[in-house]
Amino acid sequence: MYHNVALARQPIVDNSLSTFGYELLYRRDVRANNADVYDQVGATAQVITACLLDLGLHNIVGTGKAFVNFPRGYLVNPSGVPLPKDHTVIEVLEDAGFDAVLLASLRRWHNAGFKIALDDFVFEPKLAPFVEIAEYIKLDMLALGKEAFHQQVEALRPYNVKIIAEKIETWEDYHFAKLLEVDYYQGYFFEKPQALSKKASNVNQMTLLQLMASLMKANDMSIAELENIVSQDIGLVHKLLKYLNSPLMGLVASVDSLRLAIMLIGTEQLKSITNLLLMSEMTADREVLQAQVLLRAKHAELFAQSQQYANQERYFLAGMLSMIDVCVGVDLEDILSELPLPLEFTGAILERSGRVGYTLDLIEAYEKNRPIKSEEDMKTLAQTYAEAVKWVEGFRAAV
Image (cartoon, rainbow, N blue to C red):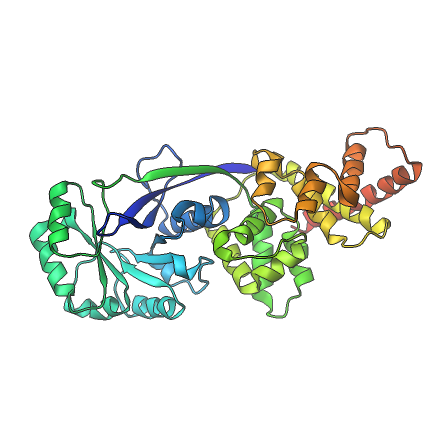
């Protein structure tokens, strides 16, 4: 139900040697010293997923910029990315193929509000249209050599772009670039890439495919229908709540139902997140545990319905989240502290307070065959458990 995600970051500094932003780099695991990329599109998707839905972009770059490598296959994909535009710079790789198709795609990204950086760039007059829509040009000191680097800087001076000198390895490299009055610097002279890692929940591929098919099918799909699909996968619920809780999202309200979470994210953003997760191929075999989570969540919801409790959708979410520590492999209190939940809702899950907590206690007692004082509760639990089992079996047969 969970796995370790990793990426590396390398700072980009300004002329006062203050950190301006970080380039985010793909890593297979925290021990890897280089990218070792086999699938550029998948690697980009995994970097975005890790920083946005797992590690938290604010934890990686603070208030600075995140420079993310985008291969051609991702750039021409119309689905977009759910990254905050004010904090994201799209790095166009040198092998992206600078043709009319790419130029049109970059203009769409630029018009959408994203900043563009041309990575390992070598200027030629025919590439001027690309320079004109770029905010940053990254020149590789090591690959170009000092003479060619100087020529590139002079060729780019007429354009309104900021130059980042990368692969700065020594004091001499830095001093040379500083004399040329470039804007920013990056390289081992300042800091090597730093690996970051964290445990993250898996997402079921069938749920993602079902959700994407529904999102593509019609523009008028109801929130209730989307909620029904999303609620079937605890890993997806966890990631969506973490996404909402990022300081970069600016969420001022707390969330105590999946329906509200989906409404706050919006269908277009949900489509981007779903597409991102599909491309990152973050799927694992977890059928038995998935069934247990779904059974507890549905059982809690059906019991709440039988008691005519208000806000019955809260009970499904509480049931799911009460088992998320097993799914993610991290202490339950630590996980819930990362999510935009009301304090009383978190307390209900952790301390079993209020009606939600009481319901969770009863559900868990029934699951583990513990004594239940009320005969009426026992009778209701048996009935709602049977209904929940039937519902889970129906869902699993459907997917």
